[in-house]
Image (cartoon, rainbow, N blue to C red; front, side, top):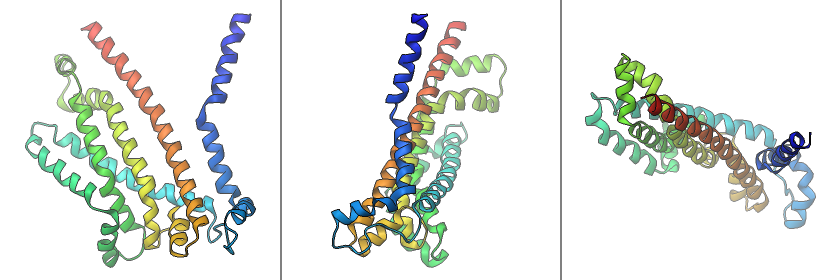
Length: 265
């Protein structure tokens, strides 16, 4: 009985030491209870009349920020993965360098410059921000897709062809599933970049966690800047840890699948 109980206790202790639930709890405590920290920020910044951002609730800013990142990241994933798959096919290999160059230019183009160009055409809305985030988040996804597909052993494709799979079946049943850990790692990088970059969306009238940061900078209110930056940083850390677990799970599955297939072969 003692042997059975020990692992359970060890598992419980490991659960308490897991930082992810604590980080999520801290984030929720901040977004729901920021007003309760007014005394703390007032002590830190006694010259400020309003030491806590109150123009919008932090939970509404968090949800708006997550929606903005989710929409832009979904579009970037669709474009990046599709382009990556297309240029690894025999018909698209000659366009690979061109696609990589174009996407790399989008990464180097400052998001603020994209907003400056898009706002006169689209107006102050979420659309210019989404375009900027998509352009900024494409490169890691494209690189992850290319690296993931290129990393597959040639023998794996030969086995799939040997059992009579069509090129489409090989792509969907073999290449993409086995390349998933590297592709998701690229998506992870893109999403984390966009969580931080999405704060600039508030400069074009879009509600996000960048609102207290932008207002704080323009009004010389350091407390607002700290509050917005703290929530953005916590959100990025939480999402990064979630992706880390996903990538680790996919990597273990890929390794097991490749080992099994090589053994059978």
